Image (tube, rainbow, N blue to C red; front, side, top):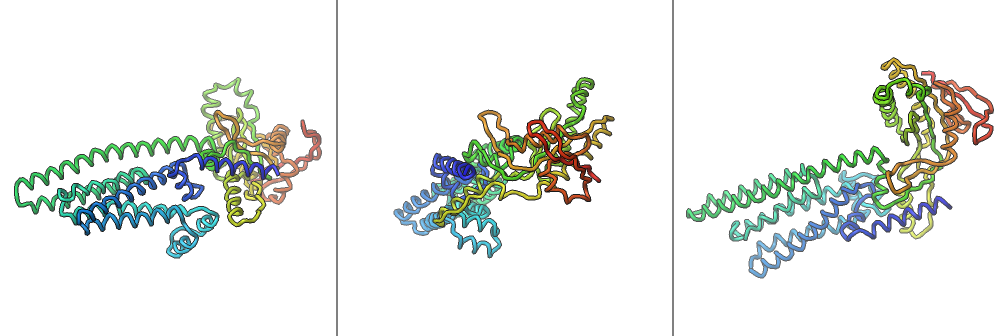
Length: 477
């Protein structure tokens, strides 16, 4: 019941977040897969804004050309507005049949199609819509320019094509917009040079040269400012995201950005490891902190962090010289539950909400054990590097926890519960260079006899837990 209440609160917080956004942002959220970043949502909402405004402008310009009797010129804006209207409608209101057609042509994948059936849109096709928009907005004004007989007769309609590189900088990337800008400059130069070549009087030549200089010069200055701004903004965004992702897991960051806070997930089964350097407190009084912490401990934690990524685990935190790791966490609990909930609501029948552990990885006990074994190897290597003799004491337990992010300042992702306390007790009651296991953890990994030598400790007294049957594991490799 608590898990279902938590899932319902997560769903309501996401719905509230969506309802607080402006129209364009809500449409971008509706037409995007939940895994897209906030930066991508901003780009998509900008795409919708620019596309909608240019559709209106194209309709207005087409009507104006009709009134003036320029039927050929009027055809281009109407074609653009019609095509872009179809693009916008299909982008916002995708259907399953469209996904199947795209899949037959190798666009998108089956997983994304399954997601679309749950009310979500395949994000790969966003590229198609953007390229359609950029190509149309580049080509149509130039076509009108030719149809009306030049820059002077058309009133400089080719300036509208500049929205193509500008739009690419906003809802694509600075690098891609540079390509479109060079295409724009090249077409402008060709068309204006052709008019200069065909001018019969000197005054016409001078006029066309002025048009060429002013259009290309002005657009060059404006685009340079836009390009530099977009490029630096992308770099700073990337840096800030890297810092944020080093503090919180990526899926937790996405959930917080989408309005889901606080995050409290019940995880039915995880494996928790605590590791502690034996003798570090005594050594800190004897060795210089710049050496002990700035060199030795830095290298230790750096090596352990790389092992965490290698084994697919989650580093929770360091406490002094202690290191805490958890395996089996699935940070997308609220997201997956909400997706299942939307699917069940759309089918008008009740579906039991899945627990977090049902979605997780069942191999995390083995991964944690192999990780612990590698920790000993890394400690031996770094001990030799600095001519030290530290040992490592490790304790592991397997059980349910509550994971999430609480508080208002300096967010940290953490886990809570009796299983965490038990894992900590396993470490504090362990022996150097051995892995101390609870009975639950031993039952999950007792088949690893080729990698570890297991020894039963019998029943021992554990503070706060009473008598517990525990085991010691010695790595054989």
